[in-house]
Length: 175
Image 1: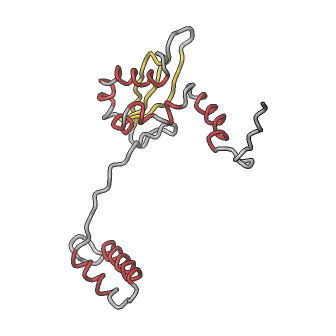
Image 2 (image 1 turned 60 degrees about the vertical axis):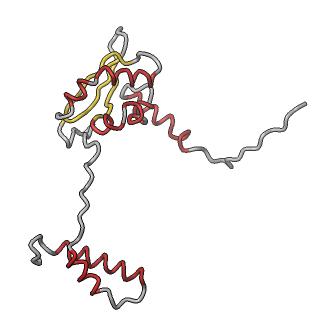
Image 3 (image 1 turned 60 degrees about the horizontal axis):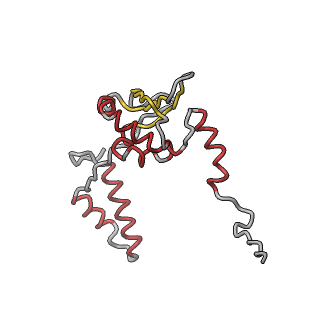
C-alpha cells in the first residue's frame, strides 16, 4: 500500500537557522571552532558565572599534535580565577565535543574595552535604582493635576519628574 505524499506546510519558506547555518559554520570554522555550539551555548557549557567574565576567542591546532588549544578572553582581574578553574573548564568544554578535543586552555587578558577582535565588556553591572526626591514627585503631581485622563496624567508626571531630576543638582539647585 503506497502512502500519500506529505504536503509541505512551509509554503516555500525556510527556517532562519537553516538559512544561516552554512554562514555561521564558515565564520566559526575560520576561528577554529568546528563545533559552533561552543560559541552559541557558552553560558550553558561553562556556567553563568564563568560566562560573565570570559568568552572563547579561538581554537588552534598544532601540526601533528593531538588536541587543540582553546583561547579564552577575560579581563586582567579575572584571569587568576580562571587559571584556577582550568581543569574544570576543560572538562566542561570537552563534554560539549563528546571527546577530548581540547587539550590546552590559554587565557588571554585585555582591558575592559578590549581589542578590535575580542571586546571584553562581558556583562555590565546593574545600575542602582534611584528614587526621585519626594519634593520633586510632589511638584510633578501638582503640575499634572489638571489633566483628566489617567494615562496622560501619569505620563506627564513621569516626564516632569525626569526633567526636574535631570535639571536639579544634588543640593537642590537648578543647573
